[in-house]
Image (cartoon, rainbow, N blue to C red; front, side):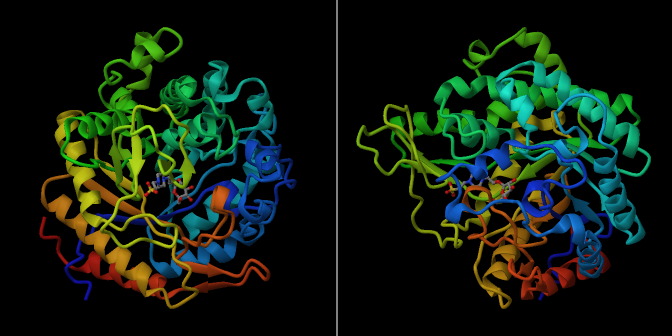
Length: 454
Ligand code: GBH
């Protein structure tokens, strides 16, 4: 069944999570407020008024979760540090209790034979930094570099893989452009400086981590193909603009040291000096992949133009369209494994020798099936086959981290969307491995013993 999903003995297998989505315990250990605490407290922001106050209670139950990972047989665990646990106000000395929590987690992982692969920032900005302008203010780049230095000093001796920022595109688009995520700003194209400051903070963090003795550093950036709604010139041009905005605005500066043409002028600061920092060479490039988007030209009557269910305002030069002809996850996202292979081949073609090895830092799906989740198995089987094909086609992918270990707090959708290999009963916190957990365990085992064709 799974023998042809043989990626060889050196391929790395993992799962991904993030702090705000699983930890809970938001007032413990000296943790400061984050933008997500604030956002969740605002009526109307999150489905069912859900919050991350308890989430999966991972802060207290991390040992049980590490045991689940050990039994799953993964070799790498991608999680995120909560910046407000390390620096409650986003600046100044470290909170010892915050560092101690991650110390316990990291030691438990190493004890279980699992490599920790932390992300420094997965969207939970310390609220005082947001009050001072957040990602709109260049000062946050200095703050982020300081934060990276604190983490390297404490953990570089035991952490063999580092990720700076998760999905700068989503913070820019959902957080500051459309307001569907914290901090809930609706700046449309005036949100572009948010992209620049995150990219610069990323580059500064790479340098600070290395200066602190850390090695094997990358980013986790989300990428997916943009498919023109038709062959018409108008639709193709609209799709190309959208593609620049969601993909190349974030990957080109890092991998080429340039913005797609026309974007430099929208960015603040000494842009060409900044690009030199942003393009500090990486040890790997992490790609999060979910679903392709279909985009057409503006029709002027787009009351259906939406991305992730968020209606776009009128007057934009493009329209994301419903992608028909594909099965969908319970989140409504199209299931199109061919798009996964396509984006990986596009990276290889676009960046050539400038592209470091790739890790798939997230891929997964929301299905509401409690334990017998055959639909998740089918999804993962299709996406892993597409990945194998891309590797056979010459794309250098070194590992695959599934999103996610546990059902968890799915941002604006609250607890309504379940991405876990392990079911979580949010009333009792009981964890129950789903069929996909057992299937994934078998895939990992078999993959290690079978020789890769590649
Ligand atoms: C990631 O975001 C996050 O890193 C993670 O925290 C989150 O829990 C996980 O994914 C699941 O959402 O055009 O309608 O097909 C993913 C963000 C999701 C943005 C898919 C683009 C396209 C949906 N991406 N989305 S659609």
